[in-house]
Picture (cartoon, rainbow, N blue to C red):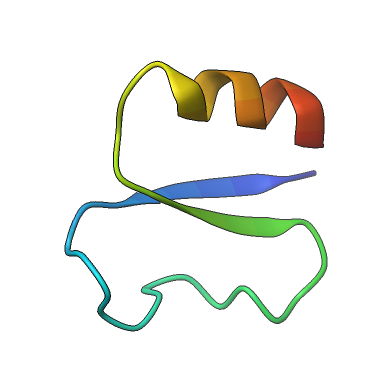
Length: 41
């Protein structure tokens, strides 16, 4: 199962442990992350 997080704090460290498989943190929030989620799923 994949886990996605949207980071809207700029260039701060990821709040999600992205070193594990299936975990993704996406910077910013617009229509584009939905496309990225489809591509990664």
